[in-house]
Amino acid sequence: MPTVIFRSGSKLLDCSKRALVIGILNITPDSFVDGGKWMNEEQAVRRAKEMITQGVDIIDIGGESTGPGSADVSADEELSRVLPIISALRKEFPAAWLSLDTWKAQVAEYALESGIDMINDISAGRFDPQMFSVIAKHQCPYVLMYSKDTTARTTRNDQQYDDVIETIHAFLSDRINIALKQGIDRSRIIVDPGLGWFVSGTPSYSFEILYHLEAFADLAPVFVSPSRKSFLAGPDNLPASKRLPATLDATKIALQHGATFIRTHDVAETREVIDCYTNSIIDHRGKNPSPDISTL
Image (tube, rainbow, N blue to C red; front, side, top):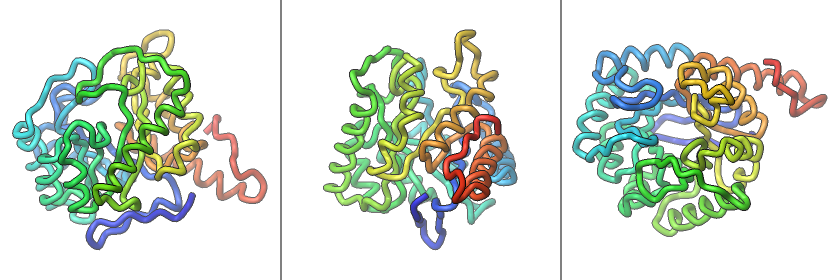
């Protein structure tokens, strides 16, 4: 991996040694995997402590579900969900890296003032025209994600592509250029090509993205979130609760093809896969720089 170091205050995040684990902490009643489980401060602190023990690198807090069928959430409601959690986690774990999954500039502003280190934006700055100015002001690490939709509610539209990789690359390149013009430092940018319904209901597109992550490496470090998504349901249409094995297989593919960040509901298992892959690279350096980890 190239040397990439992100900063937040006096904290450093070194992405050059291995892929980093982004642990999902949803403060929502309707998220498709863990909705309603971590809604209060005590529950969230307990889950965050568990993830830290399991080897998480960044905790990604979400106050609004954007999956198909999810409900609209006002900025005030989102803030009422996430700000107490941010405060509690920052007090309990002052050295932890905290990210916020939001597309709203107002929410991002308050969160950054309250101790958030990073913003993860599913809209790549499209849904709120003030988002780029907030990121430019704080110069925090910022994830721009591709989505086929033009509103925050992800649809079940089964979009088709002539070339999904070219389409996503062009989209992300355009959003980066706009971000740069609005004052965001390029060294702060991370790209997420999107997976699952954010791209299409056709699973093959998500797998094509995973097998071609290198195509986005010229833009910025690559962030992916395959965790228990619907494209992993398989021919038996497995529920989210049974998609962990497929999620870990998708994680292996992402690692082989250059992912820098893996966002997941399953921190311990994902960290184990990353560590096995990293150790395999080290053990085979000079012999087999890209080992097959399909059996890990």
